[in-house]
Each structure stands twice: as C-alpha cells, then as structure tokens.
Length: 263
Image (cartoon, rainbow, N blue to C red):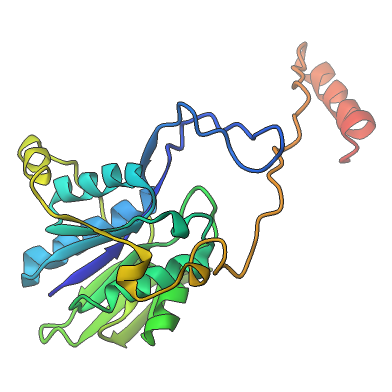
C-alpha cells in the first residue's frame, strides 16, 4: 500500500516565541524548528502500514528550504521518499490554500490512503486534512486513535475518542485520516536510518509544476487573513498564603473574594 503523509515543520514547542513589534508575525531569528508533533503519529502509522502490507510511505510538505530538515527526519524514521512544495508563491497560505497545493501534488501520486496530523501546533487551525479530503473528493475521519486496514486493503476501521466513550467507524479506501496522540508511539530515527535518509529523494515542486498560478496559492489564494498577532496579557505574580491552616484558609477566602472576585 502507498501511504501519503502530509506533514509540516513548526517551531519547537519549547522555543520562546516573540511577536514582532508591528504585530505582523513572530520573530524567527534563533527559532528551532521540528516536525509537527501530530505529524509524527502520521509518519509512524504510515511506516507500520508499509511494514505490514508493503508499498511506500511518501512524505509531502510545503515550506521554504528549511522544511527539508523535517522531511529528512521522516525519511530517517523510515519513509521512502518525499515531495517538497517550495516556491515563494506558497508563502502566507492558510489551511485552504495549503490543502489546494497539496492536493494537486498528491493527484500525481498513486496512493491508497492519506494521513495528516490532527493539527499543526503553530496555528492550531486543524483545517488542512478535511480541506484536502474535500478537494480530492475523498471520505475523511479526524482525530483517530486506532487504524485497522482490512486484509483486502479496500476498507479501514478506525476509532476516535468522543465524550464518554469511543466511536468506531468503517470507511472505504482511499480516504484521509488525521492522527492524534494515542494512535501509536513514534519511533526514533536510528543512526543507519539517518545515514540512509541523506540519499533518499526530496523532490522539489514549484507552482508551475502543479499546474496552478500564483493567485491560487499562498496568501493570494487564501480564504482567511491574519490581521495582527497579539501576545497574551501578562499575568500578575501569584501570592503565597502562609500561616496556620485555619488562618491561611480565612486569608485565602478573603483574597479570593476581595481581590480575585471569584467567590
């Protein structure tokens, strides 16, 4: 089975994010970038499917030259090859414009299913997977925590968590699934895997190769626009209530009532 994995490179979750003075974006100097954590689950699941059924795990991402680092990480984990949508015209894309470009690239590849992370931790939009399915006219199921492929490879049964229980869904393939924590435990890249990844294909594709024009992708082709970035308001320092338990409890209630005004 050929599995397409749509992945994204994002700032490391431990990186200190600073907003530009004019609010137009974040300060990118000295930021460490990594593969989106939810995309790691998608890559791992693709590798498990490949190990069971054969075929290829193919990575697809959109971004600048730096995004190759994330592709190399997936290739080191065991993916077979990758496709890199790299063109200045792609810059500023929202979820829809990103999905449109990815869809055109995927149409040129033979595939049996598509896996994505449930969302990217930088913008938290969670739109690319469902939008991609719509553009490719495929069924999709989001937030999966279990994926089973039928022996004939024509259907998949998935589970996802809902309030108070689990939902079990069966769907015909090909289909699009978005992955989250609980689906699997992503493997670490081995040293041999890292060395092999250096020789695996990273195929660059620009707008023209997709058969699209610049006004269909990137900021020009987006349906939404970010007007301004604003950091969250600073929090006042906390207070420690000390003393005997009875006195401390009284003081705490007084602070909650008179200062915090929540009781």
